[in-house]
Image 1 (cartoon, rainbow, N blue to C red):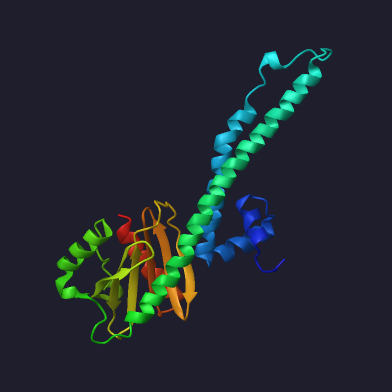
Image 2: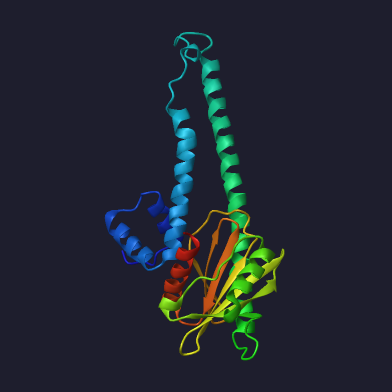
Length: 253
């Protein structure tokens, strides 16, 4: 079967329910789509968390006091008790899943706004010739100290010299809930990248790379603890993923 990979295929893959031929196709597709591969990993982690929370309860033996003799007049009551227990377990599971869903929705809202804001800031300042940044790379120490103070945490611009990009400088921007930092880089052919750093990620632990295409700007973005990061540029998706990986590697040390 060579049908396009669907959402159902991805869920079946996460649950280990694909046959061998389809499994091979899905794995090959995921290898070319790292952002969806990360999403599948999240689904598996959620499933594993539920199993850790509830499997031990289901595997426990029923206490002897709750198992009357088969001819006991209370046998029906025991069956009712078991049914109630299952309903209670279902309710608890529902609350857990609802909590996860609420958290996922909040994370999704953050993730959806991050690439749009980063792409807009990129489009506004990248064409600038005389004033592309507020503080130039020749004052990097001042730039780092200033932005770190305003964002409330030490924030250093990543080094991309080995990838052919040199720091131009940075600036402070207004965000939805406070200050945002932007660093700009340029290579020898005057292609520019911008790294947008937003300190309102809500202590989210999601570190998966995601890709967005915003008005012809490729944006790779991720959330790591309390910061959201978005690298924007026009160098092509594969090259942007390579560069975003370099940036992430420096911030995760």
